[in-house]
Length: 327
Image 1: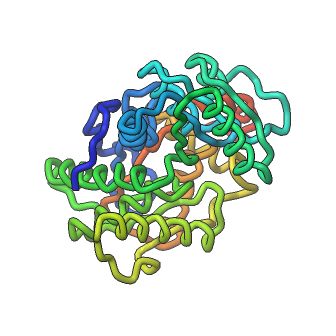
Image 2 (image 1 turned 30 degrees about the vertical axis):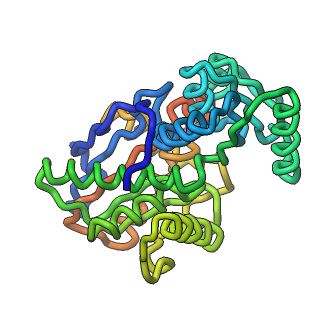
């Protein structure tokens, strides 16, 4: 189905084979560089924002509002998209445990002149409602985007991205057996699953959770698939059975990386010149390697979607001093 969107990204994003051998099972690894989408420092959120910002313009919105964590890729990308179109942007952010430093995405918020309001986890909805009401009372027409680009427009972005992957796989004359990526709010995974179902794909789509437990993550992805299918009159059966959401690599929680994740980030950086981050892609890549080893996956074609997060890496530089051994 056709949905209007803006052109924020360079697409198709690169997809190519990684030459380093990450395991001893004769698997071939490929990477899709959605960290190089071209908006700000790149990332999967740019695909989603093409649709959300177009929808905002269609509704004659003149103020963009969204929510995220203190160091949110989604919020930084939203601020960049709004700034590009000269729209003011308000970020409702989770209140940090300590005063944030002027690094990472916090630097980008300021670079794009985004306004910031902090809130506690318990008061997110209330704070968002209050801020939107304040803007409306001032005569603005605010447009709210859920955290992470959650919603059918965000899902649709990765329905389309799946088709992009299939076209590139055909060009490379390769059939992927597995697709791995960092799974957060669920719309990226929902979109890929829907795309696979519509195209009759055979890949195993595996989302590595960066925060949520298996039940919560699966429920949210399932709801996203159902909402999208209801809106566009698509029928997909046995939805829950098609969701492979792995919560074994959350560690101590969102934004907290263990030694194995940090070592994986350094390995990929040194051997491939590709930068992963401790919160999303590093955790997902490390989890992917462990999952492959534990499940004895051999002689397969494996795709990792790099969903972005370079700015978060640059906010966590001190952690890498603690790596226990040189790679």
